[in-house]
Image (cartoon, rainbow, N blue to C red; front, side):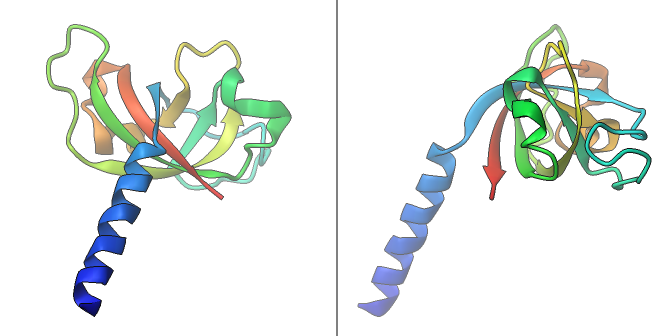
Length: 126
């Protein structure tokens, strides 16, 4: 009985995490320093810049997001790798066509960089 309850709780938790994902668009960039959040202090390469819709006057600085490619936005067929990546917001991308502008390294984990722009699901962690 305890195992059944534990499995049920695990399934509910997985469904809740999937249900809380938000649809968006991702692109990538390659110049990581300086950044709007951390100035000249490098933050590694699993990073991203937030669009105006996420920026919230810099309140998103340092927050982490898990991002998953969900499909193409252009003629590049099947860009997604099937993987997800967790990134830290370190910069602002004012006027960006995407929701999240990933580092090239982070983008390459979830999609073929040749695509340049992809549909995504993302989840923010507290």
